[in-house]
Length: 90
Image (cartoon, rainbow, N blue to C red; front, side, top):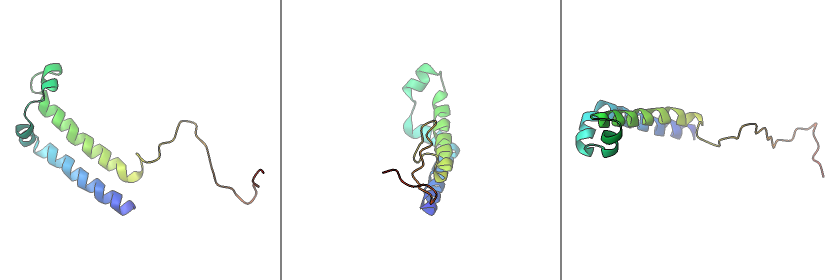
């Protein structure tokens, strides 16, 4: 399972790097993002595309290390293992 996660991570890191390298080409495909130009200012569409590429890289680098699997709540110390010295309560 870990090898598959590494494969997926490398795939999406390459996608993120491609978005960063060819962000002007991606901009010509997608056009202007209306909300980015309106709320952030002129020329911010390319910056948003860069942030998307960086987001792909960050999430992909964290994925193989189980960062996004089985999130625990703060203070959750539940341990379901029973050792030999412990006896189950009936």
